[in-house]
Length: 435
Image (cartoon, rainbow, N blue to C red; front, side, top):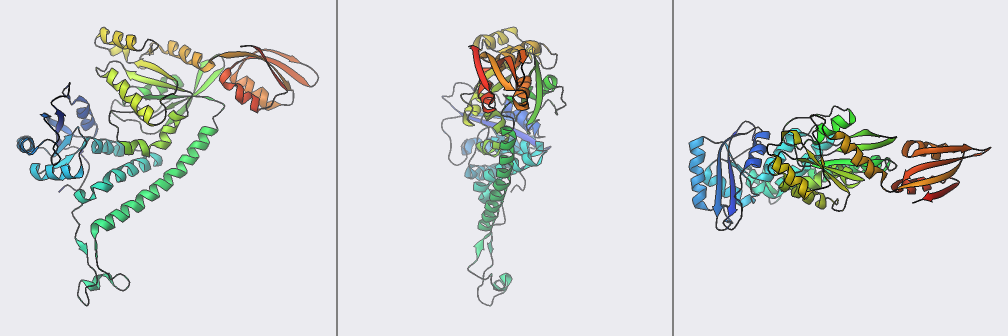
């Protein structure tokens, strides 16, 4: 019986079961990349077409027996399914195959655990792991003997001592209580982080907020670095970044926005992770604009776009303003593939975060979104009112200023989106010159 969820440096066989009426056979490319990101060595692939999903073993006992032979042949340490398995299916497969079996969700959780660096990320990953593990306790622990109770004056009865002697309790129930207690504590800590996060986001309400979203390894962190002159950790691997990073991005013309990077998405992202990373994903939920970064060199780019849209809808961003950014155009192997993406998404901006190609065009597209429908305003404000004047100098284009004894009349171009914020500062008068 396995004692760990890790797949570090283990020899792995990848399995994908699909129904006979399924149009496309899984290619296991993504699962292979996930396994390698977790540190495993992929020694074999085992795609299997099945008539129906077996409740006991998912792939059927016959194919499970074939898989057991391949495990022996390749001296595999772990079998990784591209499907999500039930606890019972994992148990049955492990008995037949006689080696550790994990599913797609468990693999992704393992990768997240190795990538977590900050306290927030570690708490989020631990919570997701525990919530995933809870219904699987009966399959993961081997110490399920009953705890000794008070069977009279027996040796076993003496174990508990005064105040603890009773009818006995399975270790499983103790494990469940401990896990429940830990989950409650983690949620309490994350709720506190959520509150701080929301205060941080609330403090930025006067700033235009942009969030980078996209499939994992699409180049979001590289783009953040080059646009904001930052040094966020970048590596060519899945889920290199788990923590949100927010930096100032100067668009030119006096426009300053906040640009945030987020955890990458993936197909069938475990819902426990989506729930646990709520605080991190709040950046996307509260953004004024989402930059959906796409790896245009990936043959599965169109499918990845659909997957990201699904996650965005799941976290409440389904109706947010989105600008698609086709990244890595410098390494697209076939020009026709890029043309197809441009046809599918005509408003997309083509860039290369590595070479800098297209970044000027991206800046202009974002600036147009930032300005939105600009208004020409004539604002009368007291000369002593520093708040209004500071706001206008920070977030508008000042065209003219006229000073009198007590007041200053300022003509500006201001995004219509920022007009409510200006009104909340209560200047003496706001006149809309044109719309």
